[in-house]
Length: 115
Length: 116
Image (cartoon, rainbow over the protein chains, first blue to last red):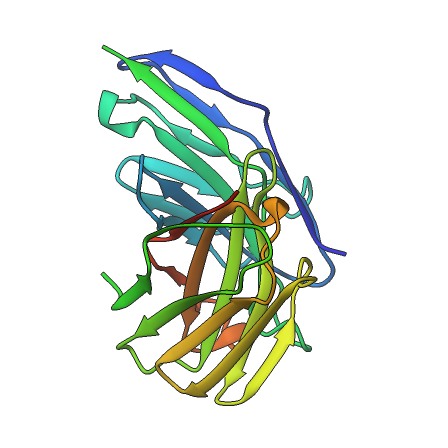
């Protein structure tokens, strides 16, 4: 079945540091890939997405490129801020068939950014 | 923000009692989902619905049932709550399900359930 693996956290960075959170997946066919962010005490918000190979999703300075050859969708940001402190989830959606758009999530990565 | 509300937002209950969580949407989306969030597991799908009265099981459906009598409401019921069901429960909606690769799921604010 489908699966998503994220790098183990927590990740602690200083403000303005470079961020990478690794995400790899296993899926049949051509899934869509997503990054969601969860701020403390809140629900999940879509951060960015990519729906086909070589697509780059971007939002709020975050980027991720859909790499089919390495089955990866790593999240990057060039300069993090304290306000980026949150939990980040990588997820995939299988398309077609009887999947009904279900999302498969990674375990989440806690990011803490210090001033 | 997508119009999704969940109620209650917090609940403490005792083992063996029935519990119903409600998800309400104002977007008229066809697909609705219930997930639970637990440390180290991310979010896992409990049940989902692809239309009024059309529901199916997800990966962690044991001990849970759902109902959808109206497009806007999706209920999750724990028939006899157990401590292992202590979790944060999220509802999500989407317009096109798997038919559109670009379709996105939007999440509600969550319900924190504690079973003593």
